[in-house]
Structures are given as structure tokens and as C-alpha cells.
Amino acid sequence: MSSFSQLDLQYSLSKRKILRKPSRLFSSSHSRQNSGLAYQPNMEEMKRVFDKFDSNRDGKISQQEYKAILRALGKENTIEEVPRIFRVADLDGDGFIDFNEFVEAHKHGGGIRARDIQSAFRTFDLNGDGKITAEEVMRVLRNLGERCSLEDCRRMVRAVDTDGDGAVDMNEFMTMMTHTLTSNSN
Image (cartoon, rainbow, N blue to C red; front, side):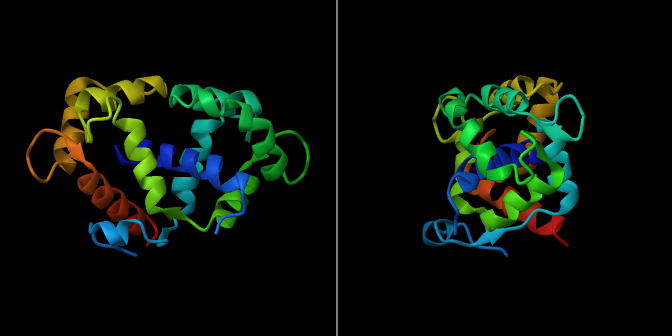
């Protein structure tokens, strides 16, 4: 689940942080979750995320590819922002975002913040009940074009589900993401 939740985190970064110039471990306490602490994924993770956006594998993200990811993530209401995102992130003015521009946009974003992790959680929590089930994971992954059986998704949820209720809550998701991001950056 972590690589796909990373995709949504990168989407959140590219959507929010490119539009405005934004400003290792933390506990799961509410006051610290809302702090401005940031996490920096490593280049390998950034490349995997970039490759998700770059569906035709030409080494650059077009506005159409970007919009397709937004649709797959259920973010249709943000599609009208894509031209503005590209005006800011497309440093060489060729109409595309290449990997270096993608990384540069991320660097200016200052890393992944707790609110971005919370936004990623909400993307997976399709019914808004505060829990991510295996069925919800499977639906989101399929929307992203990934093949994943329900049993595989159940295994992913079990790996993160520390309280044994069969679902991932915000604290478990936050723990999983902060552990994944800090271990990837080492």
C-alpha cells in the first residue's frame, strides 16, 4: 500500500505546493500531526511516482496525463487547475513537466507535511468513515490502473492494522507513512 499512497501524496504535493510557494519522526498525537514537520522521499520513490504520471513513458508529463491521474484519484474538481500548475512547474516552457522539473517542484514544496498525509488518507477512505478497508484500497488501486486482488489488499491492510480491527485508521496510516518515508530517505 505504501507505494500507492505515496502516489497520492505526490499528487497532493504537486497540486497544492506548486500552486503556491509553500512554506523525522513525529508521534501520533494530534498536536504534532498538524505541525509543519516535513518528510523528504528519496529519488527512487520520486521516480516511481513520476512514472505513474508519465503513462506513455516518454520522460515527461503532459497535461492530459496529469488530468488522467486526477480523474483516477477522484479529483475531477481540480482539473481546471492543471494549466496553472504547468505554468509554474514547467520551467523550460516546453508544455511538459520532465523529471527534473517534477523534483524541483517538490523541493520548493518543502517535503510532505502531515496535512498531505491526511489528504492521502481521505483519498483512500472512500466512504469517509475514518477507516481504510481492503475493498477501498482495491478500488483506488484499480482506478490507478494497478492490478491487485482483494486478498493482496487484505494483506496490505493487515500489515498496517495494529489494532486488529481489519481496517487502517488515521493513526495507523500516519505511522505507516512516516515509517515508510523516513526509512526510504536513509
